[in-house]
Image 1: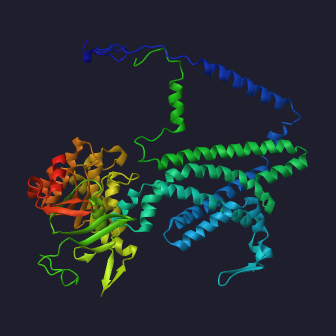
Image 2: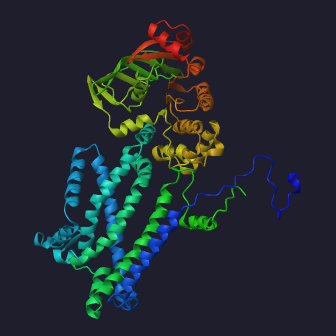
Image 3: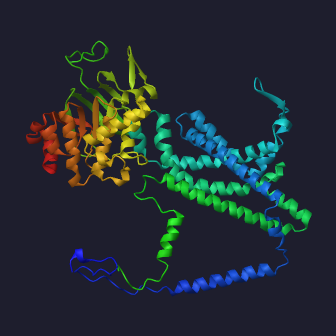
Length: 312
Length: 268
């Protein structure tokens, strides 16, 4: 048979040479056993909760309640804004900390020492009660008001969460900056690039690979930590859920509802994180990792048990 | 011959200003003295080879030339100007980072480990510095980058990231990147030491081509063949001092010093 004779529908005859291997794959019985045990446990837990004295109908009833939706949007707003403060502050602090200037590096060290060393709830109360120290805010030409008018619950919450986050982000960013090979800085300097340009164009883009994964962690953490700001009179998802629970006589059910919403939001954020990581991986690996959808497609194709056929 | 003597007051009178001039250069890392008084002179348009065993200070000296390392004693001049300092009377003033960066624009450097920017394509690597440092327009810089990649034989790899290139290709991109700044002096720090033997030739060809175009080059190398063929001067360093210097052919075929003889008998 010559190559030209090949027809599309027919199985092409294998070219002369060693026969393709058709071995029986190793059987993993442990996987079946563990899967059965896990499913059984899951069913038992779900059944137990279903039988419990919980009014499950209350959850769907209030799931898209206006107050819950307001709470969700406020939680997201708080997360995004305080993470923004955190990331920008963190990068600035990390650069300050690594600076040759002893003054800026000491300031950054002190900042991190304080904001990382005290609980975020305490810091929130601190911002909340700052009116005891300052009575007026007076930015001479720009703005002048009583402190209590200036320090709204939203601003209190943002400062409390964001400035605390900046301290953590500073350490994450510092790790990222240190992870970039020194040769990169040298190459940039040898080309005549200034310190600032080198940092912005060469070092930070490469540091992002190291910075993004733990930052994703921080975002998810922040999303949940926002539930603390009820303490400074800023209502968000958790507070609204609690309120509804107390008024409707289904307090525990509303905790489940809130948990479900937090899970939904963190899931969406995790997907976003994946794509950001993929973006910053460009150039560092020869081939970009597959997107989840590509992975699913690949798994679907190989789902069938291999029948001991290789290269068929 | 360019006459820059009027501009500089601290260089001995000569018909042409040496591109690099070292006078008793000392460099220590903590208690370890790496350079113990280096005196040498690189003429414009010359290919100047530095050879010697590892740890002899050749790379350190090279890095001193563009002030990646600060020297502890002596004087180092590039094109008649002090490296890293300004002299007023008998006082030396450290240059600001910005001023050091200005001087580095004119000195290209090629590293042993390439040090390409991994998050940029080959073309972006080459056009980055002209755009960011010299303020060249993006389109113009890209066009120039393509010309330079063409010159090093990599026009078809312009869109590839460094991780998608072989070592030899990466090093040629690195040379193009340095050339993009139109340097008057090129420093090569063992440019072929991290390469597979098969790929060394391509890089050396590019360097040979560059030498023929009249570029002043200081090359730290273990490629004796290249040094003999292309080099105009050669210095053998050991233990932080210059042991022997002269024309590559003379030094390599007829070394006078015992230390040079034993080194060359091992590498040739």
